[in-house]
Image 1 (tube, helix red, strand yellow):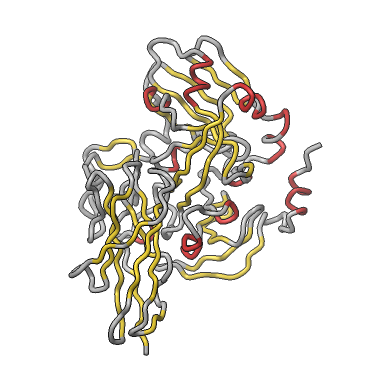
Image 2 (cartoon, rainbow, N blue to C red):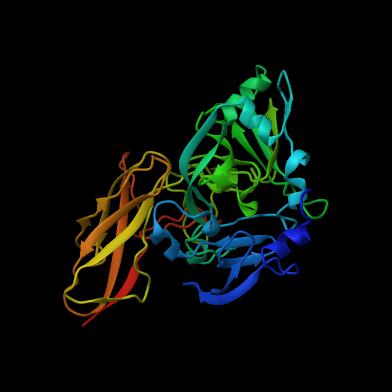
Length: 401
């Protein structure tokens, strides 16, 4: 018998009223940046943006631990105040995935049936919130004010969405595939969180219906028991607690596709600060990003001694070609050494031995370039939704004797 939600929370040693235990606080690098570090079920203390629904950011120090983000440190992002759904709806025989709509043979499948009927597939891929880094935008924009910790890289395992769609028999004329999870609106009138993939994209064999994350069942707050994995694309498409796949023969016009999650129809997804774009398109693939993870703002490093700089880089699936590092605000650059390649959708670790001369304040920059030649701007680009930040992020350190 499944435990009740109260017993489940109690078994993890968390307070039922808040579903979490606050430990300490951190100050994010922007105005009104005070945040609590909070331990939620199956999670170590993470940076809490909101409690209803839970939105938890990974501390940047976690990314120095390796290319794979541990499950208990992986960020959490929900949109609807009634989220997450209770575990009673998610486990055992109570959970079913429906595949319906413009198909020849509608399906209703439990998690065990998915595993029995379809070939297992896996991918190492980054999941990143579209608004990762939104709190750093200037001028400020509305929305969740996050630092750069709304991302993580994991090994996802499950079955291919394309295999499931083929088993259902997609009818001619199908246009899109709608993805719906069990996180429901708390009151009538609030749009359900439903996302759409173009038919060609939905048949991409890299897109998974994942049941496992880093060798374990999905954590409750990361989509248990089934979530969509769309490698190279922003997390808005990675529907958690997936329970319905609907094939449609027309373009879906739901709120979370239009007007939400749209970017300026421009190669760099930007407009002049304070203006609005004339035309928009749905957000899609990641741009190129890189971070220094071994040092944080204010870190102290010894002069004349070698410090090993470490970091990560990733993009929308072309793969990282190089990372270069500057300690003089871009006047000169040195190539870093790339670490193990976990796949084109994964974090790529990098290292560089740095021996700072003299003493005083120094600013470190890391800049990645992918195999298509795409890189990162040195000046931040702006859009009114605060999406797709990928400027070279400075790390200010003190060189001491």
